[in-house]
Image (cartoon, rainbow, N blue to C red; front, side, top):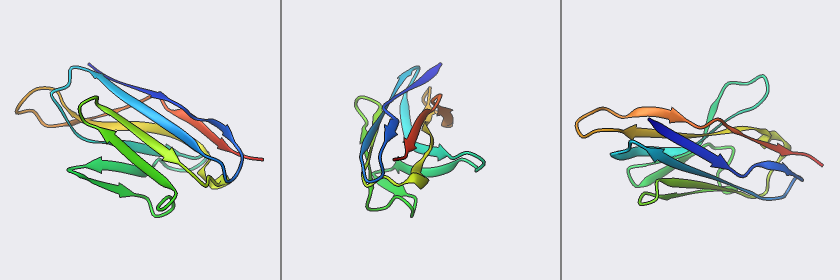
Length: 120
């Protein structure tokens, strides 16, 4: 099995910063992509940032404020969130597309989620 363990999150005032971390472990041959999604109350889950093939894709709403850092050797990904806004409030989920054995297609795995609340 593959396990994604998230850390970070919490309550922060508008304009503040938080850092989320995610570590993948288990039966992993390689990771095609790794990053973060979020789901706000009453809304669908959306992409925040995803690192794949040497490039990183960010949601327009977080460009210039959030930075994704991926360590392939450690199978970890961090999300540095600066200039946080109330609309960033959501449950943030770590995602990884993992190849468990050579020749197999990658499969998506998810963390349990960590709550980020931006409020004064």
